[in-house]
Every structure is written in structure tokens, then in C-alpha cells.
Image (tube, rainbow, N blue to C red; front, side, top):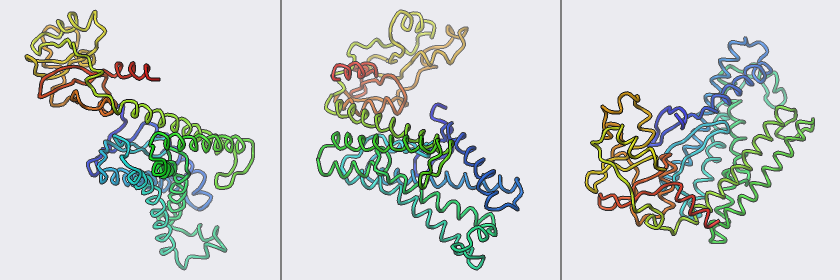
Amino acid sequence: MRDGIRIGRIFGINIYLDWSWIFIFLLITWSLAVGVFPSWHPDWSPALSFAVATVASLLFFASVLLHELSHSLVAQARGLPVRRITLFLFGGASNIEREPHDPKTEFLMAVVGPLTSIVLGFIFLILGGTFARGMGDMVNAPVETISKLSPLLTLFFWLGPINIFVGLFNLLPGFPLDGGRILRSILWALTKNFRKATLWAAGVGHLIAWLMIICGLAMAFGVTIRFFGTGLINGLWLIFLGWFLNTAASQSYRQVVVQDLLDDVPVELLMRNKVEAVSPDIPVSTFVYNYLIGTGESAFPVVIGDQIVGLVSLEDVRKIPRDEWNNITVSNIMTKAEELAVVSPHEKVSEALNQLENRDVRQVPVVENGHLIGLLRRRDIMRWLQTQS
């Protein structure tokens, strides 16, 4: 549930709705139902306006999903694993497990998203123009012509411009927007330095973010900004977008720095060699009192000999009632070995950290030829990074 609501799987990629998506979905639906569509169609009933607005919002987010899916499919084709796509407050995000390995891959992954949105926008407009032929003059008498449109054609003429706007907005060279990633790919190709290219692209992202914040403030005080309009609500929305972009640019650069620092560090350098393990046959009560209490550890490998068979943690204990601790063994509550993320001692710590973050766990067993030889904890990685800062 931390990831949101899983709604399906496409091309092997899990699709999630973040909880913030519900807010933006309702906001767009309400805005269309009480503002846009009644102004286009004064004769529509409120029920019809809300029905068409709901369908429009769903189709808009389906378009956003196609935008993100295009990123993910190119990433997969270029050998980059994609764990999930999440739709959230500001649109969507593809969870690509690692950074691209060359500028060409970065460019192709970035450019395909905006192109998908722009192409979708023109498809909707062409469909609308084709079916609306003979209904009026959209150029010289747009108000009268729009008022004659059916609900289906209304959807086409709203979805067309909004998708084109999404595509063009994402082409702004503000990292981590798609345009910022395109800029990074160009800088990367020129400098041959991924970290430096990210720093420069993030700098442009900060600049654009602050321009958005300034424009939003101006709009809130009555200034009209082309393409964005005016008013307090529009201004606050643009300020919020600018703040989000500014934060995302900083976080993205920090992530690249961390990956860069960890890229040449082997797991065996940071792992804990002396790992206290538990037997699968001991009662949960013995595990709690003899291992969890009095130590600073919250998870322990479960072994038979030196063969790892699972991992048991405080979270596992919390899932069972206190009065059953004596009757249930560790083997009944542990995460089995085949379900665990494990790393080898010679693997890069950067790749191990990706596993920790993707699985949302605090530690990962270090295994060689099926034998447990250590434990790599997230806090040990963080402590090492602090020594390098």
C-alpha cells in the first residue's frame, strides 16, 4: 500500500495510482464539470457535464500513462529494467531501476515521451476536425461551433490541446523534466562526464523552477502570463509546480552523486562480516527475547548451517499476536530465501543500494555460492557516504 493502488500490469510493468492522483483526478473533473464544459455548452445539464468531465479526466490520465509507457518501453529495449509506473499529482513517473549507460539511451528515453503526447494531441484534433466537418467555422465562429459539438467531439477537442501542451511543457530544458534529460544527454555527449552533465542540467532546472515560481506569484497578483493565464488559483498551481521541479532537480543530482560515489565500491568493503543468524526452528518468543531485545538489529538471517533459508525481522514479529509467540517458530514468519533480494560480495554497492530502495528494505544478505557470508545494511552505506561528503 505504500506504493499506492496497483491497477494492472502492461508489458511486464506494474501500474500504480499514488494516493495524490485521487486529488488531481477530482480537481480536473470538477474544473471541467463546473467551468470549462458549461462555458462551451450552456445547454448541457450538470449531470451530462460531470459525466463527460469524468470520462475526459480518465482519458487524460490514460494519455499520461501512454507517455510514461513510451519511456519505459524504450528503457526496456535499451536493457534498463523498469519496475513500475506510478500516476500521481503531477502526472506520472517511470521507476527505471538505474541510470542510462550512454547519452544515446538517455536521449531516446527522454524524447519519446513528449513526442507521444504531441502525436496523441494531433490525433485527437484530427479526429475531432474530421467528425465536426460541416458543423460550423471553428476559426471565425469558434464559440457557436463548439456549442454544437457532441460529447464525443467535445472530448476530442479538449484532449487534443491538453496533450500537446503536456508534450511541449515536458520539453522545457529543466531537469528532471524530459527536456532537461534531453539537455543532459547532449551535455553528456559533449563533456563525456555524466555527473557534470547532470549538475549543469539540474542548474537549468533550478532556473526554470524559480521562473515558474516568480510567474506564479505575478499571476496571483493579477498579472496575465501567456499560456498560463492569471488569477490566484492558477498562480498557486504554477508556484507549486515550480517548487516541485526545484526539489526534484536537487534530489536527482544528489542521487547521481551517491551512485557515482558508490559505483567503484564493492559490497565486501561495507558489509558486516560477523552476522548473528538464527535457526528456523526456534520459537518467536526466543527470537524476540534473545535476539531482538538488547541488540541494535531489527533483522536477522535465518540459516541451516551456513546455508541461508530466509530473513526474519521485527516487522514479521508484529504480524502475529503476542500470545502466539511460544507456539510459532521463526520458519513460519520469515521471508523465505527465494523471495529475498541478495547480493554478491563482488557486486557494486551502487547496485546493492538500488535493490534496497526498490525493495524498500533496510538490509540485504550477502551470499556467495548459496552460503551466507555477510549482511549489507542501508545505514552502513549511509555512514560511508557521510565520510565521503
